[in-house]
Image (cartoon, rainbow, N blue to C red; front, side, top):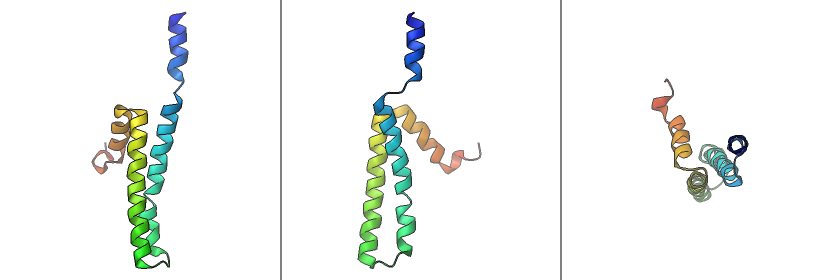
Length: 88
């Protein structure tokens, strides 16, 4: 019975894991802010502030998600984003 219970629990992910993955996805979407903002009709000061805030927000979300999902998952995900690993 213990093997069956552990197999069932192994398939389920904790709520912290799911929140962590969500934070990492939000982080990736936040990296679009610095790409889009320069093409908006805002003042230069406001654009600089929004871009800086967006980058800081993206990094905080990524590392918060990395803390929740674990070091191994975050390292694996970061390796996917490395252009050196794209052709492998």
